[in-house]
Length: 411
Image 1 (cartoon, rainbow, N blue to C red):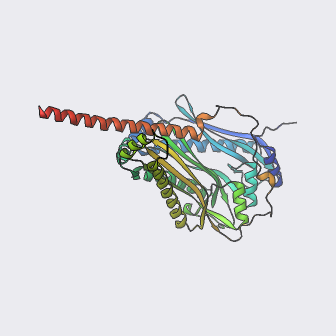
Image 2: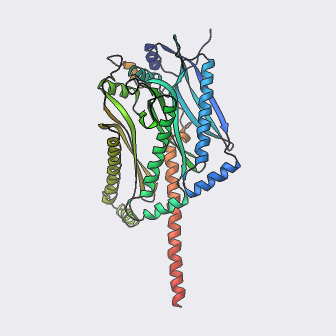
Image 3: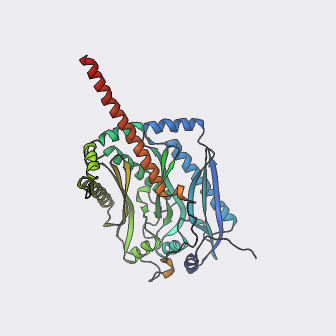
């Protein structure tokens, strides 16, 4: 008797069984890529000028898709109807890049015409199916970028004054929306009209940063009867049970909305805040700065949701990062929703097993710390500090040179 090895929990097994699915073996696919000497030189040049590193973006996209294709081939050899819990990872191997994709294959009595792959867990997949989202394929949109010396110096010089650093805000907003647009384009090419279970990750690599947005390209019969253009693909970062509850109330997602506000405390105010922090009590300048950055970020989200005809934004998350030198980055992410008739789930009550949070019985501390979002934020913060230090040294040198010239002239 053959024994299958699955990463699914008991709750996931229960939810899958309710939709006539059962787990199979783990499916894996990988690919190892090299940027090449010419590409590396080109990427280095783009790193200096700033913006998207197109060669690196294309390389990463090719590598990730090749790994996904091989994972699905592995699942087909297992006779699977689909693959759940799909993840896409990037690792460095002696100067090369390895892309790894894996998930758990699932089987059913009546195999679908097309094998699917989804980033959803077994419990989330139950919620998606019950709420009318038929999974098609694991989809992604990515962009590799660098701040660049030019943009960095311009932004940092602007940061000497208090308020928003527009160069940074515009760049980060454009980067995130470019990655989302690529996700939507890939979903539309697959014949999907929605992408659910969207996740955003910031991954530092080779002197640059990759923004990766992944999700499950799906089709909901209420959204459209056929293919849609990329800009009309619905996107949502809500969990499976949130989507189910939303549908039960007659609401449907419209679009993932994102905004970024980069603010500077200003050189003069930064010095004042440092001296004030030596005594106990509130720092009013810092308090007002953070408040303004958050309010600006929320206002951008409201405008974007209104532009797409949404009624409200739910599940909004506000995150704040310290870029160093009195510069902060506030990020807002949420899902814009609206009322839509005919989106009620197939069953009147959600299974309790679909909302139970699985407990971790094994904790391998330190094994994955290098790939966590907090590590990425830490690296980004250090990069910000390095840029600030470099600019500070340049300003100090300029002042010193001016003083020397004035002394020499007086003689």
